[in-house]
Length: 237
Length: 326
Ligand SMILES: Nc1ncnc2c1ncn2[C@@H]1O[C@H](COP(=O)(O)OP(=O)(O)OP(=O)(O)O)[C@@H](O)[C@H]1O
Ligand SMILES: [Mg+2]
Image (cartoon, rainbow over all chains, first blue to last red; front, side):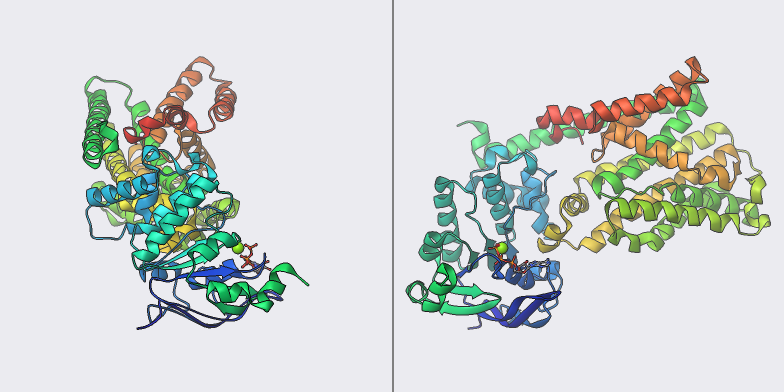
């Protein structure tokens, strides 16, 4: 069985700064792979390279066994990759329903069927009452939920969540954790970035620790917790 | 069970919202259509209403670029001017019947749009400035063409003076085609993709939207209609010269009318054009000398107090109307 995500020797430089320095990573189908690391470790850059918005300088990215390196973001999206953003990026002047329709615009399904699916997805995310509002009228936490709903609309096989719990109330946090668990249970591969270690440890099947653009440790939650290199990178020396 | 809380309830609610939308569209569209249809019959002011329709079309097409796609083409007049010269040259030099020449004006607009398409990579003020510069270049190119083709500084006489009524009804057909297209666009998948790209192009790209293609389609729609308008106006006035065909004031008026009504809505540019053209006429009649000054002040007031435009402000106050008012 091929891995859902494979990253080999990924390197990304910004001028003199090496944000990713030969990242090796693999995530299996239906696995939640947590990614931890201090600020500036390269977590978001890694996601941006996988989904094609940044062009990697070196290395390869495979999704479901297919090489998607240097493909455009919309091609990669059509390969079944969805994501959310560290700072929500909703379509501000569009209704919630229209926000959800954007990723499925090129589907053959008829509009009413898609709208119905959008409504059901919004209902799942507790946003149904607001479906006709503009996305800019939502609170920050609600925008995070909207992004998650939008990401799920095309039924992606790989989802990447960048700090889904940042600035989110504990009640909503719990709700999101349940949603993420459901995604993995439904067979999706989840790449999860978070500074909230409690949630990461609870959700992840495995965790990768990133430091200065390199994977310094990779393994089960227990292995990562007790890994001296991780402890040092996180707590300093 | 409250109707909103179940899937079946929502689909009933959706159907009734659609019914209201289409009824409103039919009633408003029908009223406007009948109104313009009877202008010549009732011997109302044909010139005034011809230009009203022209501005509605121009502002609505501009809105596809500015409101739906997020571009501010300050050189919008380029399409209009090239369209005007296309029809004039085809009629004058090649003996085309006007009605056959007009579609070619639209095609010329689309070709010009394709030539300008690389500028879609720019955004904001950079796009606006480059667009302005390109319009200047278009004007220069045409002024430097041989006089026997473009008529030189005296302008080109079409030499087949139209019955004003004929060009009036053709203008009306063009306006209805434009409004129909934009009404379709606002509900279409292309329209949703355009709006998504406008709000966040990178995010739209990562959601599977082919940003370059979507932008190009929107841009070509915005380029087609002003070019046809230019052609119809050339026919109506029977003369084209670079001075008026590429007049920056044409862009300025288009922008003001569209913004006054509200960018990003279908009805905004229509309402904006009707209000502003009518206001213009009223002021011009009452104060022939201060006309531009007063109009300028009115525009400033409008933008200051209704920055989202008339329709935009109404929909801001009544978000639930967004579903019925495109
Ligand atoms: N577009 C960019 N241009 C220049 N430098 C960038 C760019 N994006 C990221 N970087 C740099 O790359 C490094 C890694 O950034 P990245 O956003 O991946 O960190 P991160 O691990 O997501 O951090 P955080 O936890 O704060 O979100 C940082 O030093 C950052 O300054
Ligand atoms: Mg980050």
